[in-house]
Image 1: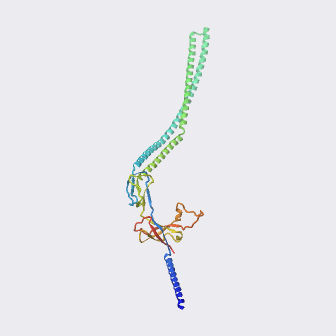
Image 2 (image 1 turned 60 degrees about the horizontal axis):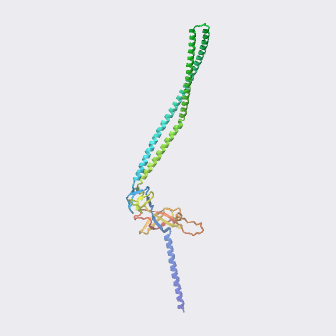
Image 3 (image 1 turned 180 degrees about the vertical axis):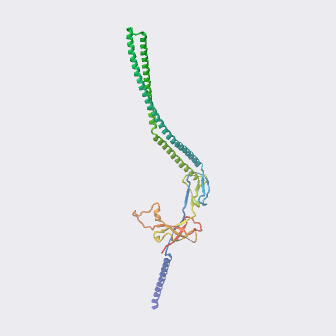
Length: 394
């Protein structure tokens, strides 16, 4: 009976011992894991990255020569493609001709400024001098006319006296008081007086006509003075034309510089060194400006690891990092360079909006950029998967 009772007790004791052993093993494993993972943050959401540079044509044309092939190593400045420059050379020649024409127009406009300044000033001085001379001619004509008018008045007086003498002589001759010779003398005197009056009247008419001509010359000279007076406006007009010509020269210079710059784009060069990839253009192919030709993958790489938001609280730039690549064996080393200022979801095409009423909490990921402590000796290919462990401060 006692043996029967002791058997279950031994079994229960054995079960408790096994349970205690398993609990001890779990506790030791948990404590070991806590000790081993203390100060470490790991993620397998990481990959190798590089600043891939897309190369595009900057001018349109036909590819004359392709100097590269896929997966070829190139250096910065190497010529990748040569585009047929015939049309570009024509454009350069056209803009050079337009520039030469603009320079000639500017030279002519600058010369016209000096000519206008001199001719306008000289023309105004000549017009003023002509006006002064015409005014003097008017005054001289008026003086002459007054003198002639006096001569006419004197001739009329002489004619009146001769008429009176002739009438008296005729009366005396009728009474036989004077001889015929004396009567003829009186008639001659009257004829001379009449001729003198006619001559003086003719001179008066000529003097009046001369005065009219002098006044006409005054009006003409005054018109020339008025026409020549706006010297400043005429000079300003030609100066404005000169400035316009200078502006056209600058426009032609810009056009010429642009044409020469486009000509230089006929040689497509590598802006950085690296490996050629995604080659999409070949000799004889017609390309448009902006068309992608190939990609250059730089040799300098880095790692971008996407940590959960609850893993970055103690993480900071400079923390050491262990990197294991799926493609290679061994552990590489680097340092944290920067932490993204926002989660990766914020940069997606349609960022999440938690104000729609259908809120589901999702742990967000924060991109962390990692630089190699020293350049890897193995070929790094952007896109390779990696497991990253960051050693953070306790």
